Length: 564
Image (tube, rainbow, N blue to C red; front, side, top):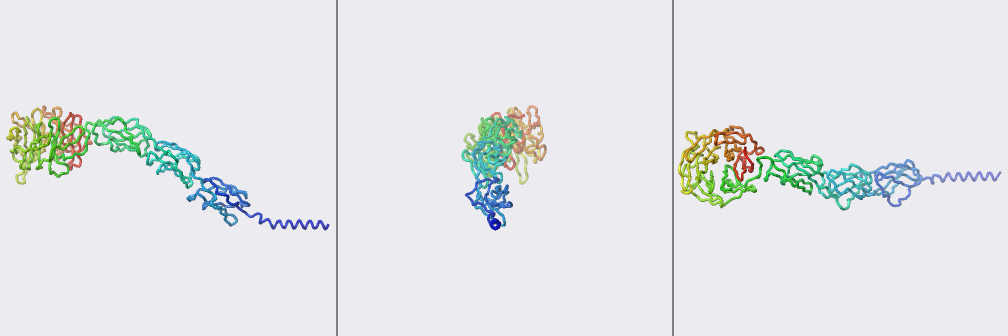
């Protein structure tokens, strides 16, 4: 009995001792860090310890992690994404009112690029393969241009070649998990555009279509015509279109070039310009105001002052039809003023109404000017001049008596061999001084001279055989500073400005048939060539219109193959 009592007392003592030790054996603890854990955002990692409470909370820096499971010894949680720029993070466990820190416990994996589509067109898809890609704060660049990510996994990205790409060769970089990796060589290469066809011929203003491949509507594409921007737009990946612009087309054709970054692709077949009138040269070295074209042999000349020279001197200029240029011949002619010029087909003659020595002869081959016998009639401004039978005829215009302007209708003929002047029949009599024939144009057909576009409806022809002037049928619309040419035995006036707003400024061309003594309007629109003031001439079977505005801001040369 006594032994049994001792056994009971011993068991009770043992049980009581166990109760006193239990609190200490169940204290929570976290195993010490054994190096850093490599992980990706979104990975599940395990933290080990003892007696970890079920309500233990986990933070990665300032970011709370989702706890997946906790059996007291192993706590599994998800690495949270972070807006911080830390690659290595301290992990904090919170339980029972205390916080335990695991310093530098997790280090984010750096992204890795193992391969990518090496070449592609702008806007097309590039596949990048590798590892440790994460959608959060993911950034893909081609050089400095951001690319749009269209699909994502940890091992593969699909991105679009950016419209804003700056070079045909670009390094691809991926920024993920606060780290950037740049793909090693070779660099990505943009596909070179290919042109398969271009509209072969068109009128100005027509739509031109370029077909090909590797185009993109939002890419940095440009189209040039002979080096000038065409204002094109990329319709789709295989089509570029634009309106054929109004610009100079010297050879009645234009070369198409598509540019993309450093690429320049030239189509081998030029676009042919179908217009009859074509701008062939922009800008002139001289002032074309009231200039008169002069044909000597196969050459065309003009006498005009340098542009922006304020009329301080005039020069002889020779036209080169091959490249539409003008070459200055000889030295400056002295005594500039109100002058008129003409030619007998061998020499060039100039009358200067404001000079004491008022009549000169020029050798066009070298531009040498020689003074000849002064004009024997009264000095006059805006006179007219023509040549018949090797002689020079000069008259019309006006002069001032006091402050009154008086029209002049007397004419004189100069004979080069005799170096002398002789008065001939007056052009008209009894006309009001308010309507002088001033700055009139002159042409010759069948050894008869025609004087027209002198400021009103009236035109005249002169027959040297009987020294007689004959009035022509009145013009349909009075014009001044119009281009006047002879073409297939008809006289054509081209543009010019209306006198006292009589007529229709939208009408460009009128023709006069000498055989029928009849004017006709030719319904031919020269638009978009909208300058009114013109000088016209023919050479090499083509018609040229030297067009300028009143301020001479524009000075352009146009070419036509035919007249109606």
